[in-house]
Length: 295
Image (cartoon, rainbow, N blue to C red):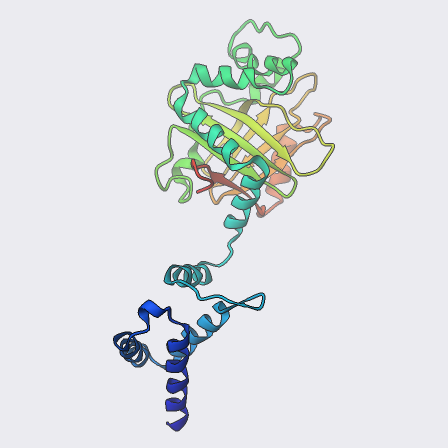
């Protein structure tokens, strides 16, 4: 019991030394004493430790504000989650202002205006052809000679987006008709735009940022869906001058994400799906974008 009262006396003295002058009044001291007894010994010791950790910063005395303490407590409860780290990495790579522009352009543009914007801002002039493929694929008389029209049998033109409807993450709050996804792996970030406000639904790769130098990004272009189930969604770039796609994007309802780029274009959808069936999970993730960052 004597040790306990010594501890209380020590904490009261520390409280008097640390509080700012405007609060160093008897009422505040007695209120602190009351709160100490009310909160219990374990909470008292924890609070004191937190205060002590906040009073030192590179040899200088710093008194934390109440907002700082509350924020510190919340951070301890939440922890530095991988989602926070991913958001910081993405915004650092693309820049917060550029992220906002990407998001607002999608949300505020009509479908035609948005596709025109993507076409206009393609990396190279030749890439504009990548935005003409959809019309060629859906027409019976394709005019684009360099596309592999035989691949059409794999494409789901009337897809729904089943994983978004069933997913606890993607559907809370409700999945919006025009949605931007930000998907990343260890090497790169992909911005994917989904236009689901009218039929036919369409998906686009709008930006690709690679972390490794001297590596060419995947150009902005339309994505085609080859699987649309509650289990996963597989999107691909159209095979140009190759038999099969050179880019596969897989999104799972739990946010897991996988990207593969068989540059030779010789991996068929059947082979790719067999490979996926052997993998239990992927550590990479997809996020719903918000104006300020990632959800």
